Length: 88
Image 1 (spheres, rainbow, N blue to C red):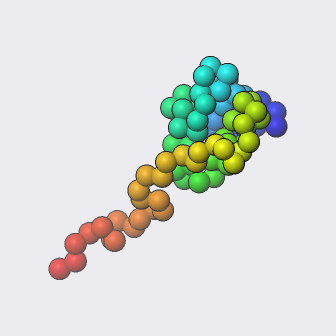
Image 2: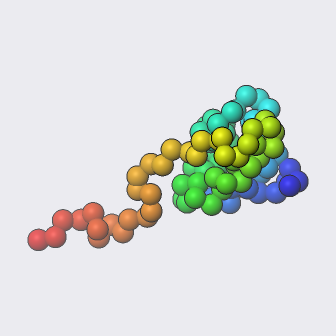
């Protein structure tokens, strides 16, 4: 995958930016998120987490299976406002 390929569509983060973060010391998906904002967009990382794990594995030599997934934070899926409003 080339450095100019966008891996996080929500935050428009490229593979090159993710690789630079890993080379600067990011060793978890959470650390990559902190350095690049990848996975912090509207989808909450559901779209790019696998790509981030793949890039982390390629750069560090770790097996993808050993890379911890990013922590999920509620809401896991978008919730309509009506579901949160009180009904009378």
